[in-house]
Structures are given as structure tokens and as C-alpha cells.
Length: 144
Image (cartoon, rainbow, N blue to C red; front, side, top):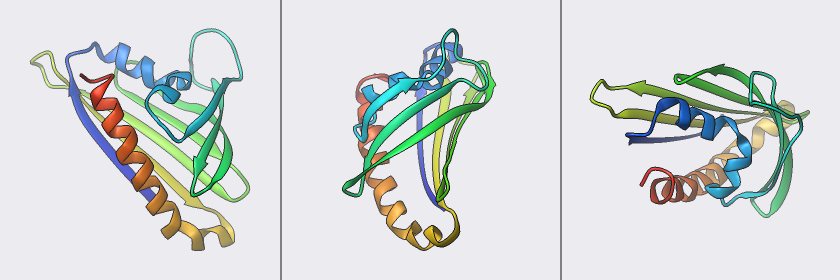
């Protein structure tokens, strides 16, 4: 399974931070691999809210439909996409330190299904490159 982890600290309100990540239309502002994002439902982002993302990865574009699988306000978010040849899961965990600072841990995982599992070393290279660029942009914009 290809995995990338990002961490940061912020004095922003945990509910605001989780809301920012839960609304995947924001992802295009910090993840340069995202070509397009479309919200597939309306209203407040809740469990089962859905987003269609088009991602450029390794010279190709992939269209993934993500759903909010877990939304624990101010604490944890899990976004999941499944296709016939992959499973993608992004998890955001917030931990309040008590001094007005919140630790943010973001983990992205991409796993092949069936024969596509053989491509996971390529997925790892791609997710490392995308993650480093996205993490740098997040630190410079959202967490600055």
C-alpha cells in the first residue's frame, strides 16, 4: 500500500480545520495533482457527502469519487474512494494539545486491487511526490 503522511500544528479552531479538509472542493487550492473537483451533493458536508476528483498522477489522469466515511467534528475525518482496481483513503486526525495549538496528522493511502497491486511501488513514488508538493503548499498557505 502506498502511503504518505503529513503533519503540522495550528492555532486555528479544530472544527474549522476539519471542515476545510472535509470539503474536498478546497483540495484543489493545496494539492497540485488535482485537475478538477465536483461536489456531488448539496448542503453541509456530512458523513456520505461525495466529491468527484480528477487527479493527474504518473502522466495519467484518474477520476476518483470520494465519500466522507467518518466525520467526528473537531477530531477525525476519513475520506474513501473505491474503484475496480484501487482503494484510496485519506485520514485527518486532530489532537488538541491544551495550549491553544492543534496537531494535524494527514495520511493518504492508495492500494491496488487484484493485479494492480503489482503497481504499488509506482503508486508510492507518485504519492510521495504529490504529497511533498501538497504538504509544502499547505504549510505555506493554510497553516501559515
